[in-house]
Length: 502
Image (cartoon, rainbow, N blue to C red; front, side, top):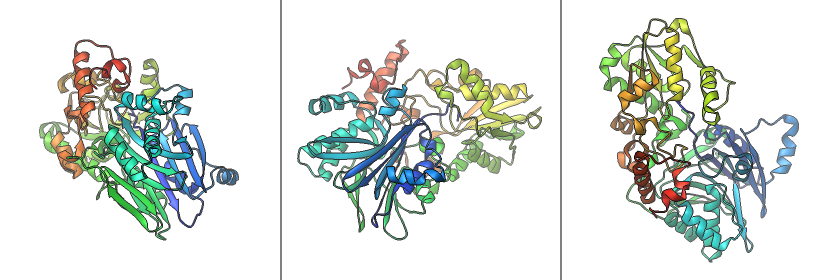
């Protein structure tokens, strides 16, 4: 992946009706999803009306055998929710990151709830104003705070959980896949009316354990069976009889994030009936079919590990070109390019991937990338290939050219950071030093996923956003950007960006 983009979060939640400790399920569920969030992690368990929480920065830690009982004592209970997070809302200083670590709680007048959330809220300013009228000391560090307090406000009005969630679905704009627990032990999950971010449900073979997860790999690691992906606008509650499903809000179309297929999800996760790696292999086959002349001029295929590996397999199978496994990631060089200063970013990118020069020298090389955002990593890689004697370098990119920001949970929220918003394909190729860039077509991407066009969010590659405020912000800020406006932060968090579009 070009820039190691950040997605908002990964959610895992579970209950055991034999009242066995739930912490091991939550722990392993988050470990399996740590790719979705490296900045912070949190566990929250429920034990007879009490919440117990542990929140910390960085990756989910390894637990030493000697410390296991301490963790069980710290997080007792038979219901639990967990979260791994990257920031796509709020500040990024250490104090704010700690304050914004999920799961979050909200309480007032004897009511209390906890939620873990994946997504991003667009109508932030409206919600902050409303919540501030009920909670004078309200502190906003992440969008989960907005959702938890909005839900609590509706419960304080005397609504039951179903009615309160329905109001949230109707009045919160954006992407939100939520798992939660009330003080009374109600265990539930719900999705926004467009189903933008993933959330699936599964159960144990003993029918005593039930879980919600952003990805199926967290069910797999816990020995749980996948039952279904939550529908758009659906609330699911869990009782000893199993899942109780109710669709509360129905929009004309879904808008599942297409970027999940290209980059974010683990290759061994499954959406509907397809594994992600199978879809990525088809992406590679598509690009070969769409660019036969480039393929004829190439000698070998090289992937940018690891998200380019599956598409490289597809390119190899369709073209007959050898996939040369001559690029390897240094497993323990884990610094992220996006958190580094520009002067540090180049050196770190160069150190993260090892390329075997003797396999490249004199060759016309196709390299496979999942996407190009800023272009930094791809440019550094191509420079490295040139130094090693590559005769030509073609770039096959599985995700179409990104032309607009995301407001729904991917931290590419300004036009200025997107090389594709300012330059066409030929210009990008020149900037990063490639002989040519071949993006997969939008139609090819859609067909490979097995979804239809009106089931996917393609906003960042088409400019057509699934929610009205998101569309207005994008149009207003694109106009200003083209006129020379200097973006100073995420567009949906800038008051000057949104004050004319509400």
